[in-house]
Image (cartoon, rainbow, N blue to C red; front, side):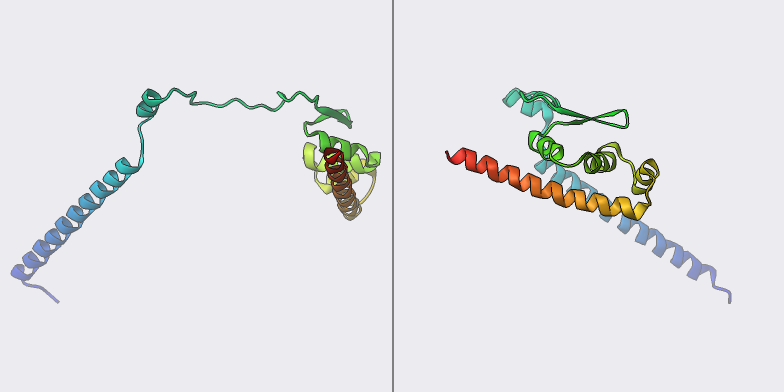
Length: 152
């Protein structure tokens, strides 16, 4: 089907008009977005002039007065900063300590831990779950002892 030259020209003008409308509305949206952003954001220079503050932070992993507890697992040092967690881990058997530390701190998977101890993955998984339950009980026992000591 052939269209007349006049009809094709009309379609072209209509398309140009449509594009102009779309571009105009997009420009309006962009201006509104910038206005909203400008209303909500505060310049860092303004904040620095109002009140001086250090725009950075410093990690404080080992700034506590308590010394971190170091566990040695397969020749690797595992540092536990939380005193209660370290105490609860120390109350576990050596094997349970090692399984938990290897999995959660060193990053070994159950298969790798199983190869180290000559056990299958499911055995290590169940031992880890049992160790977690015992660790939770020890954690709660320590928490109870601390609360009891605080009341005296």
